[in-house]
Image (cartoon, rainbow, N blue to C red):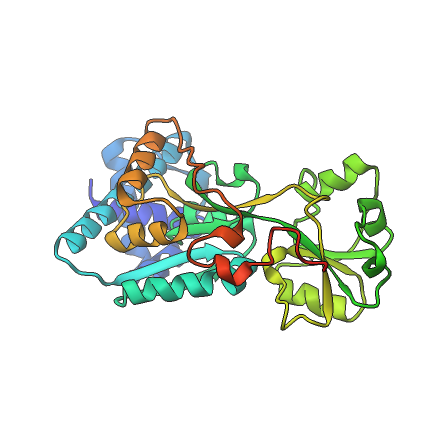
Length: 342
């Protein structure tokens, strides 16, 4: 059994059971991939694929288990290489962070600026998407860290640490009828077309549940992943916007009124997550320490050990409002504390 065979096996699965595409991704020949997989099946005396003619239609039960273990082995091989690089003092590499548009645009710039000052040899790549896609990217080893605020069950396969909590705000033009209300209710919001984040009104989401419990039916007319897009449509008077508080910039968005919604919706938590089997290089520890207030390398290692033991990390002492974050809180002094509509 060779590592090459395991790589080929996993590549076939990751390319939709298409051997030709797997070979292209591996920069090798299709016959070579087919031959190595056949040799692996012969050695194991097990069929790994369900075959229909010359096509692969899926994995057998044995194939599912072999692929699962192969992924673990290949991850450990890469971890060993990372150990070698760290021991050699090679502070070079790439940090891939999967996150939402809101985090990437409004929260991460200052944090990543500090990170690059501390680790100038590390390039950073941001991959943006919705919370479900973000979690999957890390699970599929396409990113090192996930930073998002989605429902916790989306990240159940990852080690997750809370960074901060934040509130929602309602955006309207200054002349809008809601601007004259001191404390708008959910029923008040439901009277107008609503523009908010993609999936924010999915069944079971905080916003959907809040309206349901109130007995109000929201009229959601438009959703988008990017809060800047939401604000653009609010400016067109197509509806009222519901966004994260940090997406409102008092100066740049002065044509819009931000109405505090802390009384209407529960607080949201932003998490950072990573795979349990991920070897954390020195710069990754540095990134976590920067993101999560109060964490140091020793605490991170303890939390990882707890998670691997099945207990799961429960780190709550860092959880504070965004405006209290030691690295970036000063940029959000009016966020998460009900000071918007003054």
